[in-house]
Length: 455
Image (cartoon, rainbow, N blue to C red; front, side, top):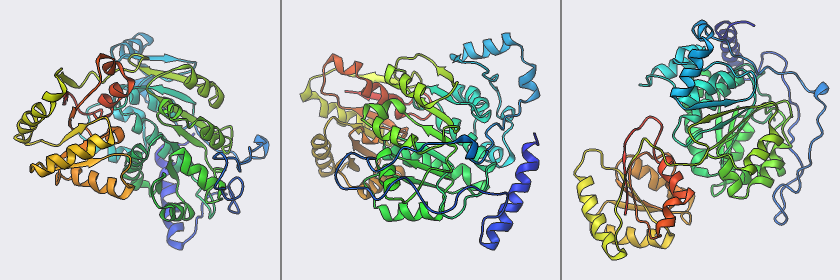
């Protein structure tokens, strides 16, 4: 198989030339007229009722490539004992046949230059465990299940191979849907994934979009109609667009189910199955989950073929051990005084952005109002806020204009700041999966020992 550099140099030259002329170009493409499962979505009935299950004949489908992995000589030279030692020290366990050896350094992944150039701009020393084992597997075109806590670097574990996969496929034609589809449970996670996709796909001029409920449909539809190689979507909004014929999945050959366990917890299984029925069965599928219950196992058995399972750490969901957690058990009447003393201490520091998690939307609004009245630079966010207001509040927090964010768990993902949890529950609350997930979700994989206070 030709090397990355030759193929991608030719593709880049052809892509630039043809787009300058205003059309696709390149090798023969799939596609044709705009389609996409069924008529417009009705107001009543179950989501996806208008989507017809496709019956695929693989002999009639255009062929596509999905194995692009070139094992680095240093990786090939490692003995089975060295591989086993590496996996053991990083708590990597592998189940399945023909799993490639893990890499230990970024260059060993043999990514093309347009990916390595972006990686080299980061201040990373080595791949995370899920990346070390996941990249060779994903690049080789195999189906895989990755079980790792949030904050482990899993987003890049599937997005960088996706970018390589896309750059080896024929260009999109007018009316084609995405080549890579990422399904995510929440709009917040979908937006975060899209930000990463935009950053890393820019070098090869890949377009991505994020579609989710609670936002106007018009801009999302326009993105899809212009053509995007990567679509990150929540299941409900994607079902709406598929039923209405606003997009289709006939070009999709790389499918990612991110946080599959949470999507099932939120009741998305029927929608997920309707969506997957619209995708050719010889696709590459990557499923990511923090836990491995029987419902997720069944989904993997139904959607994946001869998959390899990678597990990082324990199978049971636990809080991120890189986070310093400080718990102060007190009466309800003491909480706000303790909170104020803690905030006075935090606000005196240079890095002082803080999230205060509360249980209810009413509690969020009440605490925000009182703190602002007392002069604290605080803003609140919860699920009843409009998407526009939530985005504005998060931007105010992100850029330090309002360094105190009071939130329900809607903001628990990927913000990576000091946080305080005002927990009303008794001892059972500390065993709650949502609490453990929030601890892990609020810390990015590159950050260590950020303090988290629970009062």
